[in-house]
Picture 1 (cartoon, rainbow, N blue to C red):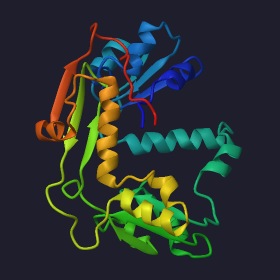
Picture 2 (cartoon, rainbow, N blue to C red):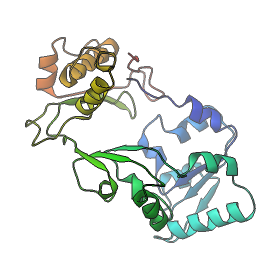
Picture 3 (tube, one colour):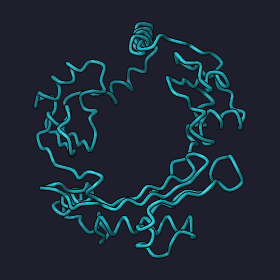
Length: 266
């Protein structure tokens, strides 16, 4: 596991305009790309699309477009029309990366994006419903979402109350944090964690040991905790003590700026 940095994002800013759509990015902490653009002297034109005159619009925007509330879709449709009509799209990229058929297999975990994240939902529905266009769909979720209704195989996933986990925040904002989550109940019915589902698939493929590395789900959580201790050695040495405490917070050393820490990849 690891923390993704903004190197690629910052490099891209040398070439492309930055469009901020209905969000106040400058309030997301000192690792906010807009703050870093200014700090590192990036030459990038910032366009803010928001009906509100936010701190982002006031302090960073080269152009503020105050659209009427609720008209985002109309603006997106207009932009798409111009891009297509004037030949400004990368057609080869769209052909190779957008929802094309025939589709051999879709694996969707805890996501309702199969059907509700496309501009033409009816066309998407027809593709997902036609086995000649989409051969197999596996959905893992704990809710009967719209996407789950198209599944050939629907596997019940655990909720956050049924599995232990941890969340290491690093320095997304001025505070770093580690959150330890202990399961409250055993998984109900046939619900399984994603790790356990994948481990069983790996077993049937003959690569169980390579996938699990000899650890169960809970053992992996404990292992990741000790990886966190490589970054923050002041965390409790005993994993059980950390679980009992539950939440750890610390201020960024040296004040605002890109955080120096990241969990090393295993």
